[in-house]
Amino acid sequence: MTGPPELDPVIHAQARLRVTATLAALCGGDRITFPRLQELLEMTAGNLSTHLRKLEDAGYVEITKAHQRRTPVTYVELTRAGRRAFEDYTAALRTLLDPAAMNGRSS
Amino acid sequence: MSEPHIVHDADRPPTAADALAIIEREQAHASSKLAPNIAAFYGIWGMVWLASGVLFFLTASAAAAGWATAALVVTGTVISAVIGVRSGRGITGTSSRQGLLYGLSWPISMTALGMLVGRMGALGVPGSVMAVLSPALFALLVGALYLVAGAIWTSPVDYALGGWVMAVAVTSVFIGLPGSPLVLGLGAGGGLLVRAGLSLVKGRNTCS
Image (cartoon, rainbow over all chains, first blue to last red; front, side):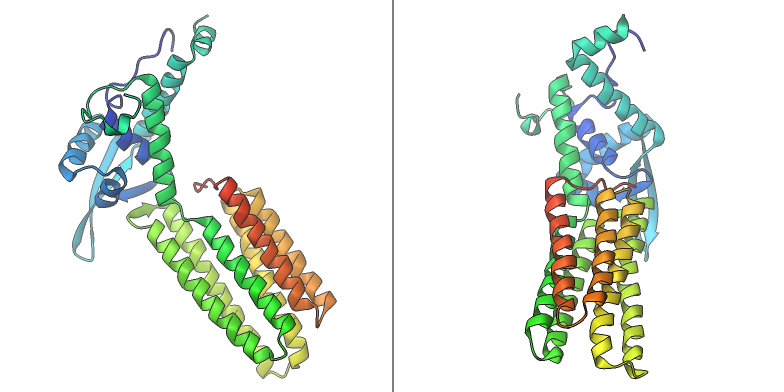
């Protein structure tokens, strides 16, 4: 990567950034139910669904539907690509905020 | 602008500084809700060990101290189970399964040891020997489980705590009555309370 880093537009929006950061706080290989994620983020179900769909379309989030004692449960997790994209995004932010590091990288 | 949380245009791209602030805040919030409050675990069990050790040391009636200890252990177990279940709500996967199995290894091994110790009494091991050996055996097992926790979550502090509690258990057997309950109470209980204090200062990374 050379020059000033570009911020991933899929993650670089307030709501999706909040969703991605929260999912990245889970341990790798863990999934969270939709209602618990909604509770953590204090977002409406419709709003969260919309943003999750965008993240899913980008391949950053995997949504699985399972059944637990006949009740359907929706699980959400960050994919490997999603975790990677979030790490790259965070690194890009730090580079943008620290010009010294950016100069060091481009020279 | 300085408080991105209340901005309603959720699709508006934040500034780089705001974005970093959002990440930090969301992850701290998520971790505080998702990770079990380990300071509470250590604090509760530190108090149980301390209270029980002091009770056995001070009280003439071992039966009374025994019942009081049983009541403390039941209370501690219920609180620990509630803390563990609440934090793991809605999460499934490798680390949550690992946490669940580790959590369950406590009641499983303590119950097994309880049955073994009970049988020792029935087999005719004298009361004075039981009074020294049985609490030391529990402390030994507790220490071993903390060693395991230290290994699973690569936590040197928990590993050291495990070693310390085991050393206290062995020491108490060499000291014998009447001092051994006090050694266990202060040593094991004190160690756990110190660990509780440390986890308040710096939380454990809950991913192994």
